[in-house]
Length: 149
Length: 385
Image (cartoon, rainbow over all chains, first blue to last red; front, side):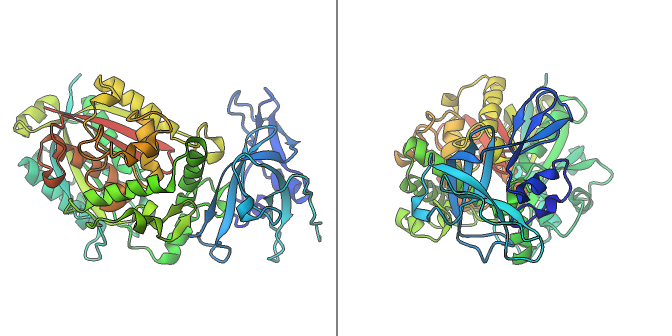
């Protein structure tokens, strides 16, 4: 079900397909290698360290700090109606980094590097098909969209 | 092991070339390179093409170019590593000569970027990053470099004015390069007032797509001495490295790890340090990219890149003149041609035939060619005979 993931999706087939199902249920998952325990976000099925192909999803807190950001004015296909929009790269508390758009709880003038953010799963309500993604919100913001299905 | 030298160079005008196919552009550069070196095409043993295929309607470009150059049945192949494809072509030609397989190889970097419709370009733009985890949120090339710039500003106090100074310098030199796309000087005020693309980058922080081709003819040491007529420029250091495709797996957001590694290799191979470099061509796809390059290449300390350009250290007369042909910014960036174009400029400089943009006493030159957002980097060191 990875075709659910993203505001636009370019990737349907992956070994970490279950990521999108978890996200739809409000859980942000990283991966833990079953061989050596290496934690990864984004999740990956094949361990870069010990090369094991066995892994388990582990739920992350979604807490992180903003590493950098930009406002996109010249947007690519599929995003021209959204421009300008704000994107941030976040260092996650447990492991790895995540890239996401800013949500409604953080205004453009409030964005500063090193600020604390909460990753919040979202269901896209603009289309008929299922779309799941996440936004960067103020700490304490919780998953507020319920699955209509 | 035999040295490798450049015995001929050719370069088209960079810009919108609605009058020519990509193989016709390649031919122009090839013809000029043969004429420059007074070479008979019979000496060419193989060609390596550097280009990014997705911009062209024509598939399998090496084949159509080799036919148009009238070089069948000699071998040809394409190298692709995004905007560093031209330098990858130089490296594979260099490797084939070092390995003793070929003695004289023509390298052609070429790109026709104006064939695609706007909708096709917007679609391509949307897939420059990691399509699994990043592209689905609307990332763009300028967007990634903008995020590097934002972090660089945060950590080191780099300013929008310093970014604009890169554009001002490169347009200043573009105005002195008859092959450049933009041959007009600009002011910092004009750059700073231009429309935002991805904050903090504006239109004048970004290089422009262009059509164009460039050719260098490489030869092993004895062939180069025989063919080169005393004006050979030697490729003495060839560094090449990679970094993660995804910005999410990068160890640094204020520099390119691949550039640091490729530079270390090239300096070691050539037996020089950054201080020995008299002139450099760096990959200024965005103004912040040039500032990061100063630091990654060791022209200044980490974090000091903004001050380096503001103090005019990268102008002719400064400590390391950079992009004195206008760089990608003003010369234009036909992606596959860029790395080869950089090598052509080094040959001009080291032969002391660069005219209004000549760096006095240039005897060691460096090129720094980046693919993507630093997934690939090639650093070459050129030395005068």
